[in-house]
Image (cartoon, rainbow, N blue to C red; front, side):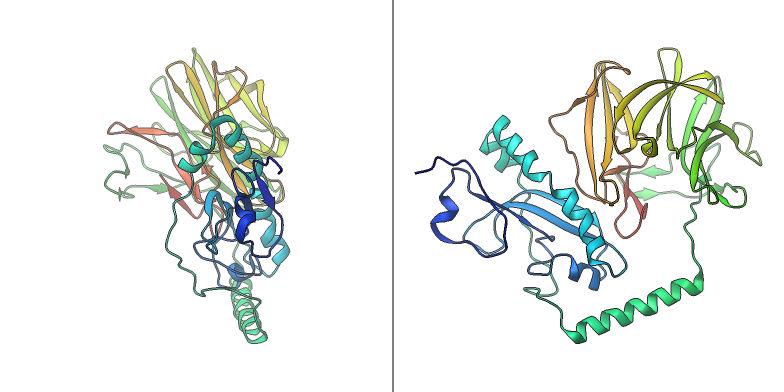
Length: 382
């Protein structure tokens, strides 16, 4: 008999019987859909038709129970809001394709008990249908009509994406209290960007008793963001000043101090790198000190503790909305990155992208994240 560790199923027929125990660690199979909400087929069609903001994908170890396997990996990806089934499948297909390698590596390094211990807990099935199948003509016509009405409304409204940045000065307490779930938005003042621009990704930084606000300044005409800064110590100036421009899109200006220097790690995925900049003449002139990582990474967020540097980096599959949050460590700010064994921390579009600095409140460390289900930057999660 063959001495098999894992059998991988690439197909859609139901497997039962002795084949399920023919390998030491079972038959592994992808399920293209959120197994808690969508069972059946076609994959990712009904998510569009029902207006779901996200599309799921799982890797499971099959059992005799239909859709009752041990889920060892799960991801959530942004759904396409239009009519392209092909585009809607890109995110979950590409985003989940590495699940198999990830879990085989984990099995090899940690053993099957660890794999089972990190399995996704089962939840009650909440789909609108017990088992989905190919939609009929009436269902397709109803969906197309609803889609047409929505698109005509959007065209009439002529909406464009426009971010707003708000600032509250002289605050006596935090606006956020995650433990109690309270949020105080009183006293915030919206900043007015120049015509044809918007401000986004604000980061505050204090130096020598003065407070600086760094932001992305997105130019619609150029279809590119540069980084700007305001000194908001004594009030909000009428216009921001240039801080960093490289000729390619920049955002998420993560500014921090270390070793007597001021540093910045902006989001520069358009250049295909995570670059570390040092202030040569703060806050308007920066020099690139080192490329820390090469690849499609966004919103790198830094944390230092007990001599170790932690880099929370969100990897994006180019051409899709598939995101995964990975944690890297280094012995120094400019040291080589090592993948943390807990990576990936998230394969969920609802919390994989960073939304600002980590912060400590009442002894608890919080990581702000963007919920990008439904639309980019829809909400903030902690």
